[in-house]
Structures are given as C-alpha cells and as structure tokens.
Length: 477
Image (cartoon, rainbow, N blue to C red; front, side, top):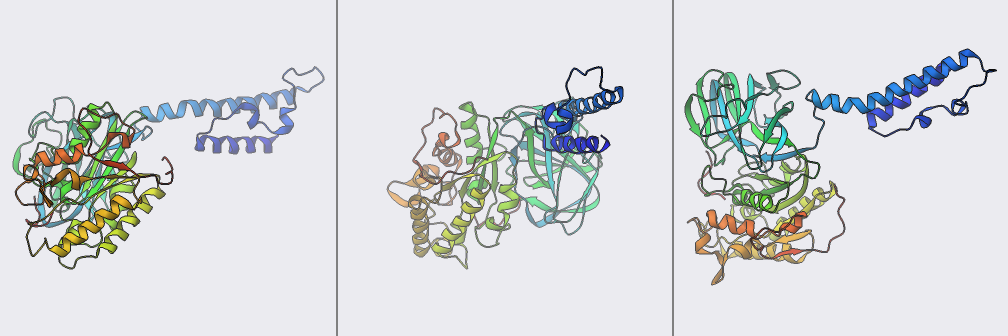
C-alpha cells in the first residue's frame, strides 16, 4: 500500500502541474478501485484505515488544485490573461543620456485597459548591468503628475530594486491597478548613481520627465529638471485583461513610429487603429514595434527588423496578429537591397510569424517621390518599390493585404504622396495621413466590427489556415 500511495502522490502532482481536471477514480490504483464503498464485516479494520488514508490524501490534492490558482492570483502572481497594451522597441542610444541618481517619469498611452498591470524594462544595449533602485506605476493626470492614490510600488521577484544583466529584460511583478482603455500610465524609474541610458527608443513623440537628483518615484508630482521625447529602459506595458482580449503588433520604420505626427497627441497610425478598434467595441490592443530609420535586412538605425522580430514581435503577450510595413529604407539608403532580397526578407517574417500561430498582414510601401531626390529617391528605387508592392498584392504570401500605398498616394501622381497627407518632406504623413492609413485597415481582419469609417482596400488572401494561437538622424524615415 505504501508504494500505491507514493504512486498516487506523484501522479496527482503531475496533474496539478499540468492543470488537468482529474477524477477521483482515475487516481486510485486498479487494485484499490475494486474495493467496495460498503465494506463487509469480514474486511479488516487495517484495510479500511488504509483506504480512508488514500481517500483523504486524494481529496487534499484535488482541494489544492481548486484553491491554488485563486490563492496565487490574490498573492500577486502572474496568473491571469496577460496582453501587451503598449510598446516601445529598444534601440542603441546615439548619444546616451547621463543619469546621476535621478528619476525618470515616462508616459505610456495604453490601448486597452485591465485590472492589473506589469511593465517591461530593458538593458538590451547596455555596456554593463543596469541597476534599478526603485520603480512605480500610476495613472497620469497631467504633465508629470499622477492621480493621487493611484501610485503602486513595482517589485521584481518581490524586491523593490533589481539589476538587469547586459542584453536582458526584466518584467515587474503584477500590481493591482484598474487601467482604463486608452488611458495614460506614468512609469517612474529611479536610477541610483552614475549610469548611462544606453537603451532607449529615440522617437518617443511623448514628453519624458527627468528629475533633479533623488528618488522621486513615489511623488505625485515630479520635480522636473529637464525633459526629452525619448523613452529610456521602458519597452512594454502589459495588462491582465478579459480572456477575449488580444493584441496586434505593427512592425515597421518611422512611418509606423509616427515621425512628424503631433507630440503628446498619439496620432501615429497604430494609435488611430487602436481608437477605431475601441470605437467598434473590441478588446484588441495595438503594439507599436516601429523604429525610425529601421531597415528590414541591414542595421542602420536600430537592429534590422529581421533580427529583432523575435524580441519585438513574437514574444509579445497576447499577440495574435502582425502588420508588416517595412522596406522603404532598404530601397532608399545607400548600399540598397534588390527587390528580390526585400521580398525574401518579407517571406522569412511571414514564415516565422506563422510558425507561432500569428496571422500576418502585409502593408504596401508608401510613395516617396521627391524625398531627398537623387540621394534617397531615385527612378531605380521607385521601380523597386513598385516591384515589392506588386508582390505584396499578388503573391498571396500574406494572409491579407493592407494597401497603405493606395490610401496615401496622389491620384494625379501615384509616385507621390497626396499633398493633403504630406508632412512636408514628401515621404512622411501628417496627422491626417496617419489617420488615412488607419482607415485603410479593415477591422474584420481581427474579428472586430467595423467602425463608422470605411476601410480602404484590405484584400484578404486565401492562404492555408494558420494555427490560432529625441534623437534621430534628420533624414531617414
């Protein structure tokens, strides 16, 4: 009987670990299942006692299975349905910010809300370990101030400070905080001693507040010494949302990053897409994985998109969809790639995302005539853009096509951006242009209802079923 008990406990432990639903008879050894529930007078008292002992142990295991998840969630574990709601892809700082025992308060405009929150901090490009002395999260009211009473201490494995190794990421423990859809979170990070902020997201388009010396992470109003428009160390925010919540990741360059959109206004096309989805009543987040100046195949500004796909896209919590809109810098920068090489790069992105069950939608490359003519824009470059767009539209490699080119081009001159959508540099859209890009996306691609705006030419491809699942160079896009 002792061997039977040992086997019972081992089997029950495996079921607990795997969160399977088990029945009492399945846990009992075959010989013991033959025992009758009504035990005759001829059976010995010792057999009865041994059977009752086994029964009691089994009931404790089942009770533990029922109680443990609720207890863990109450104690602040990561149990729940976590979905990324905000993202800023990390890149190496051109001119690292020097910190001297200061607090950085950064504003993250989330796309969907939830009941608990956790953040991602990155030391992807640090030359040495990154010491975080303290961190807090709260609801932003205005400027560098948070709503009184909303501040929460962030811990890492239970500690209020942490050291992030070179190239690594740290995810905070969850904290209870009711985050509204499309709300603003203030994430405050105290960095003790002298440290360089070598990991940043340059084109933040959001005011970041840096204090005078001291730990002001818990202050409702931050004593601000200076501001910038870049993000430092903060690369993601996740919320514990409803089980139907999911996320779209947008992979791209400055046109996805939102260059020339209005600062502090959240007018990038991924922001506008999130607004449309929310208006339609969907609980779908949009994560912006754009980096200004980024290329699909080669490093120029930021690690190339092919190399950062795993880190910035494929590991995002709750991601179910990917929109790819990248390649114009591979055409325009010196040492350009051929159209066939760019197409091959797109195919690799599709294959890798499909392997993890994401549906992948291809965005056509937008017009760039007269952007740095003879240097960036050339007739040969325009021919490459047309070839890549033709492949995106006709190859059926993507699960659907989002025709950003059609949404932005000038009907009178299709090689150029429509004047009403031009920020003034002949390549990057203005706020109206970014809105037009968001409007070109058919919300039904995400199982969502259409909003009042009409989508422009999102062509669904009949592919095989996919398993469900402020510092920058003034030139580059």
